[in-house]
Amino acid sequence: MFEGLSTIAVVILAILALMAVAVLVYMLKDIAAHKDELEPKTNWIISGCIGWFTNFIDTLGIGSFAPTTALLKAFKQTDDRLIPGILNVGCCLPVITEALIFIQKVEVEPITLFGMLFASAVGAWIGAGIVSSFDAQKVRLVMGIALLVTAFLMLAGIFEWMPVGGDAIGLTGVKLVAAIAINFVLGAMMTAGIGLYAPCMALVYLMGMSPIVAFPIMMGSCAMLMPVASFRFIKEKAYNRKASLAITIGGVIGVFIAAYMVTSLDMTVLRWLVIGVVIYTALVMLRAYAKGNAAKA
Image (cartoon, rainbow, N blue to C red; front, side, top):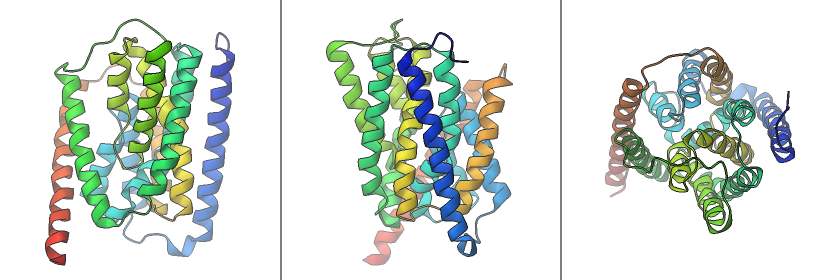
């Protein structure tokens, strides 16, 4: 199963598998302890379908945070304050599943892979501690800005404003240190709802690495940081339990379908659709923030 993989890659896969089990157990224990307090406005089927779709396109490289936020808002599944927690907890196991698949499929220089993944996890631990204490107004402002940033990065990819990359599968020296430092920042930002995929892909290209290398790095980074963030959000009770579990179940199914069954899909049309929805949701978030400020005045 692990033939051809470096020792570090095998260790990373083992760590991710253990983290997946730990997060699942911790989440299920928390849900069982609060089974009489599950959110009435959240629909199991709707949230599960949202998880299926957004993690399906996540596996194709589009990202899941922005569209998940948009659909949770559109279908009124949760309070705005809990969205960052849902994104990190609900998408955690699907993203670990992606990482387990792509780290085996695509070769990356071990030190580069481990360094960037570890840095993102440390950044997430720091970021989650801050974001989990945000009130609804702060979440609306941060999420609104985060969604606009995500939309811009997606547009940058479509119009090829980002570097196109090279053919390297790893980094050394100053480039390696810079990539690790930047991924630390991206890990912290992700806990606030700014998806890591687009900026991490831009980072990989900028450093002259092969575009295909972006997949195990960005998926592995998210898989390493999301359990860290998830434990913090669950501990602080800053997530929607029902939505997170439904997204987890639907998301894992979506990942397997995208990774093993999809052979052709018009990605350009899908990207434009997601960008449109993301921008609309960002404006809704910022409008709600402005209304909240006006009400306080």
